[in-house]
Length: 70
Image 1 (cartoon, rainbow, N blue to C red):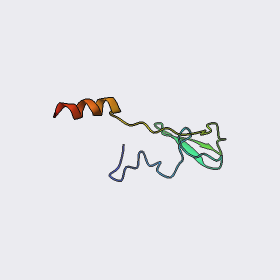
Image 2: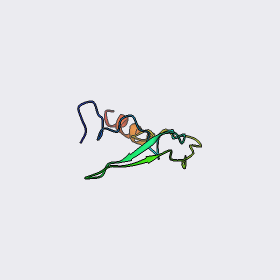
Image 3: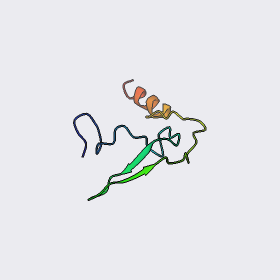
Image 4: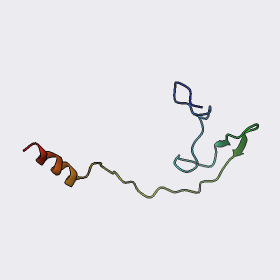
């Protein structure tokens, strides 16, 4: 149910409760059929404490690939 602009089920202006910066003022819609369920003023329950960058393939895999041409 994604349109050409990437708007999944028409919820492009809502913040995700798990990964978004939810400050307790927004709405969240659970797309159900036949009627959607809307939650209002959901409190923050996830706090981000840091981040992590993951690079694939690993350095050892890159070395192995580099040695293939030698």
